[in-house]
Amino acid sequence: MPATHAIPDLDHPGLLRAGPRASGPYAGESVEVHVCAATDCVRDESATPNLFDFGFDTVDLSGLDELQAVCASVRASGRIDDADAAAIRAALDGAELRLAHGSTVTVLYLADEGLIMRKGGPNRLSVVGPRSMGMNDHGAATSVHADQDVFGTPLSQMMDGRAPSLFRHESPDGHNRDAGLMLVNMWIPLQQITQPLVLGDGRSVDRRRHQLRYGLATESFLEREDDLAINDIWTFLHDGGQRWYLRSRMDHRSAYVFDTLSTPHGSCTLPGEDVAEQWYLAAEAAEAAVAAGDVDVLAGTLSATPPDGYPPGTPPALAEAVARVAAVINEARTDPAAVCGEGAREWLARSREARLPLVRMSLELRMVVSVAA
Image (tube, rainbow, N blue to C red; front, top):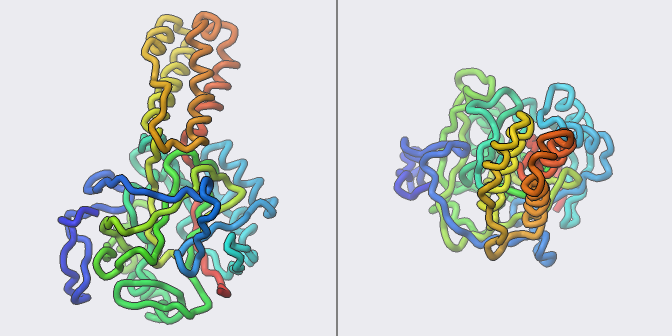
């Protein structure tokens, strides 16, 4: 959030909150963009974030066969329905999950709300409609945030003010590092080559100076009573001392588990996503021409060639995905008449198969877990 949008928090002297000009974590306006160094845990195996110190970890889901089956189905369809949601909850209810760092968490409770699917195109290209519809059509987060204030709505009403003493948390005006319960988000990537989730090392955040309360209106995506309609969350100011982590290649065989009450997170744009966006749009336009059987439009669409090179720091997984799109487009450029003719169906299938992995798809849900450090 821009520092100019921060104001004194009169209810919490000495702290800051987001002012009236601030926007929510999924809005496009009032977002300050920074180029930040981040550790890619895929390429740097020495990086070992953990849930208790950093505020996040990864968990292996590959052994949960029913969960893997429904995740594959949702990925293929591009949407989640009530039956899918029920199957996901059933697969995780009571599960003992081993974190990458070695600890185990046990799922005690799955929240009734908050299971949703998000999609984001390369370089923040929007691939969803203007409004979310239930669990679907949610875009990627546009700003860094944390999902719940342990002292605020709705936890204060739901738990009679006991949440700060029951849950581990790190807040600007208090902390609990000893509780055996955590409120966590599970973030399951169905595919994630672009717009990956980036998470902040909580130890690198000056919470009193950089963590701000924000009242998020939920009427458009949650059904709540009037006194619970404003969700108290956190937004953050940027600081060069903050440390960030991501995984540049990830699918639904693993997931992030992170502290809902404390961990700064959001989607990020990787080096090379601007190139990926151009190839994605070129393939989309070519598919429309082929579907219409219009050779002239196809030839015109493919007359401009997206760049072949990639900027420094482009993850190998992203470069490999773009190369697959480029190969399909170059096939159409070589013989547009054949592609628009009898080869149209097969080419369209190959193009869509190559293009769609450039869209990040993810599922997220919220749960209470018991923890043992």
